[in-house]
Image (spheres, helix red, strand yellow):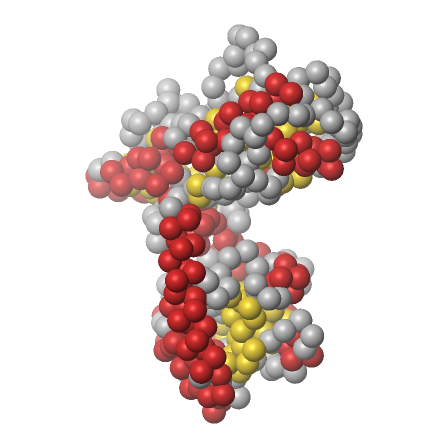
Length: 508
């Protein structure tokens, strides 16, 4: 399939390049190179830059809309530019470009992610909206309408010269794609709203305010806004899961399978949800739709059921199936979690009775003990049994283990990542797709990701370069046991539960 796409892209690229070349004089899109990139970026009050590859089909599809948007935005002083990452590889690496096309907004030399659509109208509207003040004044008479018109409205009660204004303005600049921001300079109205002056309040669906009370910094306000943006005892779905992820608070998932069950639990748990909302966001999950997520949490498929999922730390806590999902049981369970008195649950296969093969078989129950043994370098293959690319590279990986078996300070290991959770919260152990290979070094336990091809020679070179104990010069001499093509199966939403980007192989 990879070859087929490359063939198609290669066939289309000359046509696209020809069109771009013949219309270069008329193009409103600026072409950037490494040489003038920083100077151009620093000079832009607001601009948009596309990082692309000429062979990329999606880049080719975007090109006409991007050109028209550039022409439409010229009259507003907003420039659009592009960088060919096949020509400017070092620049694209510096800008952390991991896929094509990647669009980034530049404001006075600072780059942030573009979160709009890729149609002409979407690009134009998004950039025009970013020309407006991030923190506009809200008239006193218009406050009610402002709150009601937004799912989440953040309001500052102070004047534009107050020091708090600058902090909230920075927060608004960062989060305005997600929430609505404004400020009201009216002490009487603030008193009516029950907000101290100066003060910041977050309103959800026009309801009661959550008032910020912490130390005023951009970071603390961002954290507060995200944390209070999710409803108390809301509904978790593919549409709302991203909001819960961004809130950064562990999620208490209440699975139900009838409307009557949900209504009964809601009346029981509303007070509990309000009490613990800073520690756990309780949310309902319809098991008729998302039973797969319960299965991945390793819950028994009997309803109601409850689990706490900490996406940030990649841990989960399961209410025992013998316990009732009731206000009394959940108060005790959630209370222990909030106090740090619960131990996380990890899905794990049984520890093998014999483990004397050329490749060590890891399971979650012994993961930390084996992988983070500081006396050994440990190469870990995280795979899925159904992954074609994993199966194709298996002979090469087995050959590697056989060739290096005599190294006492090196373990070549593998783990079925669909049957075992990965204990710990280290981001370098995230599994965006299969196969994923990492080296956990001896001595410092530093994690090094493997990005080479799937050949024994490449594996060996990687270990020579990165293993703390190193390798000799010529341990491995054998024919290649796998194709060098680094094919890869990305983890999709069907393997996870809610949305692929936020939950990609959390295996919770």
